Length: 271
View 1 (cartoon, rainbow, N blue to C red):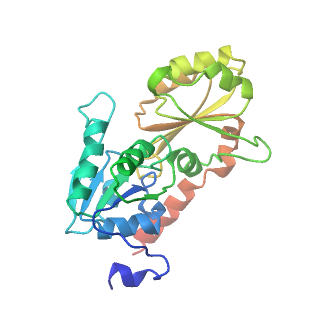
View 2: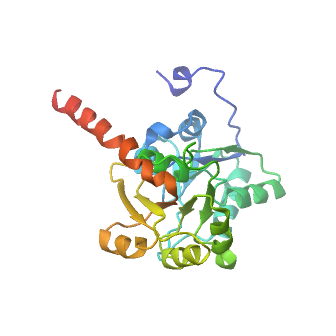
């Protein structure tokens, strides 16, 4: 059965030669891909992909697609953003169907907006294919809801790594809204100190989820006052999502993944 015949025709959309799809691959679990992202993987001529796109997702690409790595990882040799953007324009002008595949969602700390602006300026047709962002999926896979009626009616998504020094952490602390941090690992000592200086208690719960939604996912529950030392002693490594807020206390009751993994292992062992 072909890919197209396995999905209702109403779901598929044209992927025209000379166009670019800016697509999110989600946080890592292939089951969290959208159908449009899967369509892009199966129909693209060239896939320009980031470092955080899981290998199991890349394995779904058409065998005829050309794969071009454009990953950026902190402290390692990385592609420059201008070079990536110019490559997308070049490939589209050559008449290829180009899938720009990013981890998570392209418009949530993914620089997809910058790439879309450049495509628009050069008259390149493009489509945005949102993905499930790791800031929502990672905590969910660790049993931490982004919102819960008993704990919070708002949540702030923030990056710990940005041009211009990052957010005003004391101002964010003053909102009393929980925080979900992307790329906050290296800056966590400063972030934690600034949040406490802004009024958050040292007892504020903190959850850290590494390699979220993959087979290597690990979690740590700590507090704002001890999170830096606890994380250093944990042996965990990035990439990670860091959750700061009362909803982290719900994890013991909502940590569903171990039970599901046990069921899966039992089925596999029983043949």
